[in-house]
Length: 310
Length: 310
Image (cartoon, rainbow over all chains, first blue to last red; front, side, top):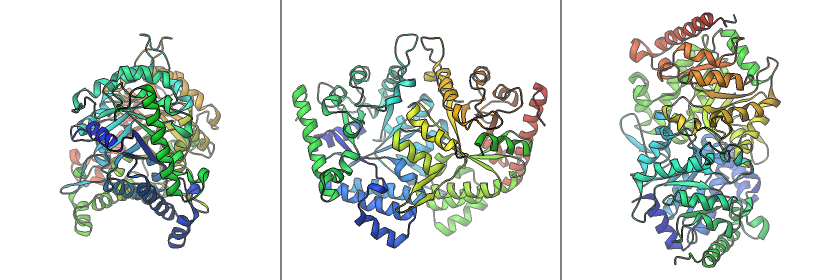
């Protein structure tokens, strides 16, 4: 089944176009979780990784009936080496077992056989000595496509097998404009040129709902740009960072949706997983309450905009 | 000591501006290496990872007195999960122990605290529960800077601690032009706009030899573009892929050097590590011979161009 079809089916099921970013930071993990691992593994990357996994399982249990997807950010895991990467792998496995779609935020990029290695390792099957193995097996991954078609093709190929990719177009950060906003001779900006490429790359992997397995990352912090990009990439699902902690409100994310009420999935990381630091109480209970608030916030905005599909 | 100073000192020591790409592929690893690991670990990613490590150690032993640096491509390791990442980590450790500079090819990119996680995990120190730990601790890493300053700053910071980064400017692949060659309103191309940014980012971390810890990736397959880029980023060391298997010759890499004979380090991966498939004999002996040929090839080109510095 096409990734976009799977994604929007999951969104329908939860009536919620949001995704929880699993971006653990050791300083913000509750002491109760850390102490046990510190005692077991000492003050090591292994103890951090084990804390992350326990923390994530608590979050997943708390939000699995509310949200359709989670988005673990690979950077926070791989910076702890093999143990961190294992915690990522087990987090993805646990999320999938609990019916969640896993979007890996890794912004991978390379060319030729190297891009193939990334695609196969994260989404497909790698060659072992005599056979094949699935390694991370997430549902979708973010990709930086500065290198052009050579770097995107392996992900498009896996789009034919039900996997997805979200390509960076206009990112949510303050300095994203330094290169992305530069104006080309033909009047378009660099990010618009990228949008055109993304639209083309996604053509061959469109699902039954009219959406492609090749999506785009479009920051909620630039709603005006998002409006133009929505028109330029009508069939690409948008992964929308920047809601919540980065300053974007629910109404800012609305330009990322099509008039059918689909086409976008909005991410919140810190605002959900570390909600307990503002709300008090247990971290999982607080995350659940924050996820429900976000769902309502997005639903209200959709109603207001007249695109509520449920 | 500034990364560029360390790199060019190592190049002086070997009189060789080349780097061996450690890009293992399981199908091309000699059977003698694989059989032992297959027997021990079964047909698993762990057996692949163990084969890679053994293979890499053989390559490092064979070339360590000839080349100044190695460049393991993270994609080929991480696609095998935690065991693969561990093989990467142990490869880097072994190379450093043998006096080689390790340039990690990972093309990482993100923003804010996520970019910091990448920088600290690969080049610096990460927070454990109570203290700090070094995880990959390579000397330099490749970075994709499509996201602007936010994504580069953490690497510049580590430039002050002796670490380095090579930022993608003009990549060696056929489709690199789709975005990178687009012409901006002011007449420059996108890759030239990127070059200007790279030059600015590197200003604060220039070493004693006048070179910056912030370098650039410039493909040998585009020598004309390289000539312009060399002038635009006079103080950035260039990491030059595309020599050998990708079609670039030694003379094609010369525009990446400054008139002082420094400023570039040329990579060859398959052409060295899998030389045994063309030359016959043991893989390590063949790699050594190929590395010596490449050294001579580059030295001859430098003499011919009148920039031989030794």
